[in-house]
Image 1 (tube, rainbow, N blue to C red):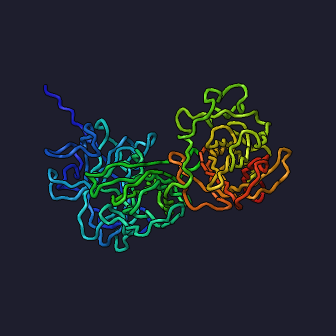
Image 2: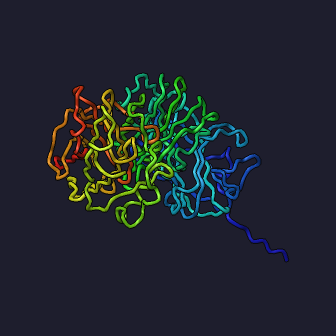
Image 3: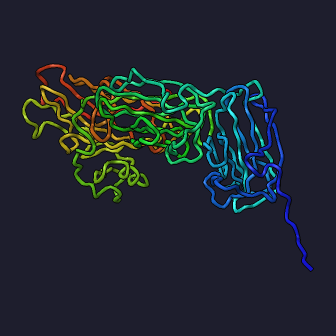
Amino acid sequence: TLNVQGGSAVPSNDNFANASTISVLPAPGAVRGLTGANGGATAESGEPNHAGVATARNSVWWRFRPSTSGQMTISTVGSSFDTVLAVYTGNSVSALTLVASNNDISGTVRESRVTFNATAGTLYRFAIAGVGNASGSIKINLRGGGGGSGGTPAPANDNLASASTISVLPAPGAVRAVTGSNAGATAESGEPNHAGVATARNSVWWRFRPSSSGPMTISTVESSFDTVLAVYTGSSMGSLNLIASNNDISASVRQSRITFNPTPGTLYVVAVAGVGNASGSIKLNMRGGGASSSGLSLAAASLANPAAAGSSNALTGTSSTLAGSLPTSQAATLPDAGQKPRMASASAGVPAGVVAAPFGDKAAAIAGNGAPALPGGEPVRLMSTVVTKSNDGVLRVPADGDGIAVLAVTNSGARATLTASLSLATQDGTATQLPVGLSICRTDAATGDCIGARGPTVTFTADTGELVTFAAFVSHKQTDVPLDAAPAGLIVNFTSNGET
């Protein structure tokens, strides 16, 4: 006796040629649900590995032809097994062009989801299969375009080839903001995972060609969603060369920021996308670099005792953080947290024609004791190291130029916008006047270049854990300055929300 036990019947849409037709597509923003199953389904000769999964071979097929263009999202959420999903164009299973595919929505969600821009009149087919040839009930969720309405149109700069051109770049130290949106954006074939984030696929593009060199910072701060940001050279997906990328500025700031040194005449392209394919308004902030004004950088300053950072006289609990933020081998000796910078007389050992404005021994640390609170109640906590060009804590002002000091500020508190300014005080903290001019600029930490013009104040935003550097300038306001005129300290004031 021959007993034959049959398995599941082959689904009617098992083969590409027999794909089930979806004739009614959802209106913009609406969702239409369909059901099916892949029990008993098989793979055809020449059929690709959907979403790159070689063990997902028991596929079933659907097809649709939208009447208008627009964004469409398809997912398998609610299916009973671990799915793969892939959307194609093409007329035979062995000659398909991939439009979009996905294995898992996330590390914990094993169903699949794709978003793409459907073109009116184009016939699309999509396949669903089970990882490890798993099978079961299928739930198909279609959101968005088609059905005569179309959904969200793709942005004009959705593709690399149509990147928006930024023709006017910011002047040194200035910031230029451009705006946009990635609603309706998609990924192109061969597009890299920007900042290494595989779920950020709805990218939009900008391009620019700088005419001069100098550090440039680009950020997405004030965008409405969790962004990734990447800068490349290259004119096609296959020729992109990564210059810089970032996912999150910090653990609490989900926008992105990069700094790099562009080469004049080189074409750069910028991609912005949303983590988890989030979308919304984009603010692209570009800060221009510039020619060196300070001539002094933290990397070039040879601090007197780098080994002392972290020793018993360093600022407890924070010295190692600051030292790690400075360039390699440039840790600073920090005084006790309650110690004010020492004011020293400048009359002894100072060359003729030089005024000394001392503000501390070697390097001075300024702790944000009694720090101002932000509107949300969190305090700003600043830790600063000051380095003089002479490396002895004395700021010498030549008769024919500027005395220069470099400041490195780390914010261990809440993100804040602050204004830095300079003043002079005597040993007891009393404000004093000298016939000198005071100015300050923000600098590039690696080169010492001023980012923007020198002025009486500079306003900046310090994210949690961010290192910000400045150059302080003291210049003569008259020719004849007595040598004894400088028993004073240079004070750096940081103001936030009216508190200093």
